[in-house]
Length: 270
Image (cartoon, rainbow, N blue to C red; front, side, top):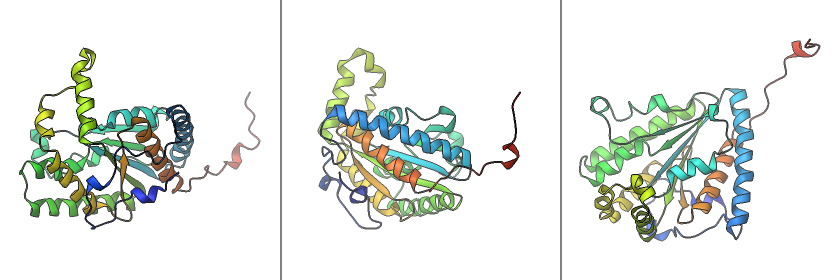
């Protein structure tokens, strides 16, 4: 099995997402049946460590999921965290800011959703939207984008200093795979609610978005809060790799059961 480090983006080193194969399956066991069984095992291990995380109540985990439309952010949440106690996890999504949110700095709406001690928080899209779509649309210039990415690095350092592990995953799919997934939504009336015709306009700027993602990932993949590119044409492989990353992040905390209360040693329940 491949090394997770191979898919970690180095800080301030330019790279091209076209050089990374979204159809590769470096963490696959070779077939879907085995991969699904392995994913269930990984999810169960995540559950066990999340219980320790909650019991210790000192550390937390923030999982940032970014990717183009149809890259599978919702599917990742459903599959990877299916075994985790819902009380120990939260999911937040960030779309176009409201008028009230626009009256504040771009991180103002984010902070209340960061994970409390003992919790896992998942961002389905995130504050990175404010250096992606805003840049592609020309709503901010390069100077403002650089300023915002500096704020992001400082914001993440603040979370890390508080005890949060920040795990950032870019779900990498090909343009052809996105085409197939969009067409599947159009062809199935039961999935029409998932289809937004505006996505077709965004798709026309595929190259611009890929360039914006590459620039943002390289500028914010720090030693403490690195970015990982997840080959995601295969939904099962995507889930397995992100589960591996989450498990590694939780293990890095070196969580142990809280100390036993000696007062309970002779307690008898009647």
